[in-house]
Image (tube, rainbow, N blue to C red; front, top):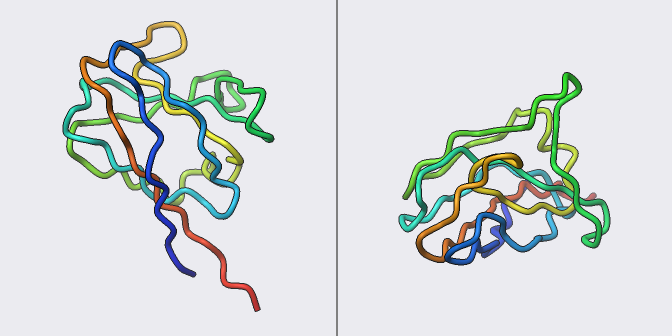
Length: 117
């Protein structure tokens, strides 16, 4: 296995939702949060094709939520939902209670890429 780092996505200043990025080459194992991030929980929108996005929930109806802190890395390897991602958008706050960012926040996403052989 090898790691591929996706440079982005970015949540623009004054917004709470990033643009979508293609994560279909592997499985998300880490999300790097920039120091500019206005602290909030993080939720997600996902897509199979990069065109139509939906909020991500678990089978019990709970919005998938992680705690995000500025200037940190969040290890998500082993979380069942990371195996289901094709395209992803990051949201500060929740679908019902988004948190606008004071500054533009560019994240990084590390994917574990399977070896072909």
